[in-house]
Image (cartoon, rainbow, N blue to C red; front, side, top):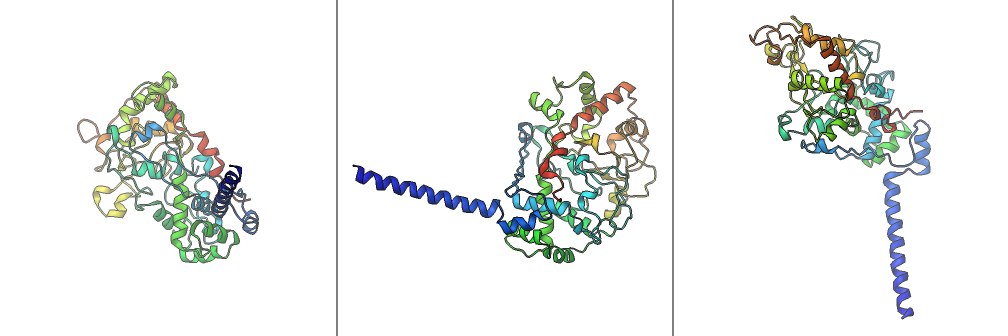
Length: 395
């Protein structure tokens, strides 16, 4: 009996050992660097010699809306993160994507207009990249439970001229004010950098760099950014996904502000902070627009003064507000919608008075306005702004 059992047991153990070794080799190839590769990386980058997990998880109340987390390639996201923080992406190597999108500010800027590669100011305020639950999930998912039109799609920039993150990245990198860098020239520049040869090889199995790889990797990193750990999300989960219920974890003032938001603001921004109800609108900032917004793209007079309706996660961190950064505080934003909306031929119908012509006035009390701001402050995700997987990887 023993002479038959031992060989079988030995073969089983040998098979297990060989399988484990094979799995280890596969794991090493895709999740760690060789000594030479890590030496090239660690000379400039503070990255671990192992896989960083960029996977996205969504809470149940978002899954119930029909939202689905994107599948993230960790090697591409790691490369995208390095690209996001690298000044080499600008013509004179003076600025990076992160120069206008700071993690501690939910990937926004604290200036009305950001400074481009040669010191010129951008034409519009930098949109917060951390204003959504997740780019792909929020911009493409949702519609269940009457949460919003299932076909409602949001695009990129204040005038939504870019239809993907990759396209947005391409336009930004090549913009004459922002980064001023030709993508083909950039690809050649990056091929000369030792750590990029390693990172592109891990992500795309080649050291050759193409413009499409650059924008694809940036898109992968941005699609890994997720903002779901807010007090609002905790309250919504406890309420079974029903934003109309008082949240037990909210103060009376915060619940008051939530009710006011649902009444006056949610028809554009969405009550669940995850699914868009409206993508573009004229919100009565001016009677005459020097910046025509979407109208400059379409040439349609009916689009003058229309701009992107942004998601509002982390809005307390992303001042100043509006496409031109004209409002320094949330109090000023609330007051605009309370009493400052201007008459315009393209003014959104939700901001018009019952006569259909003059701007709507909310006539909120001081207590109401303070409650609205208190509610907006519950949308802050502290994990997002401190997570090491999103921080600057350069030494």
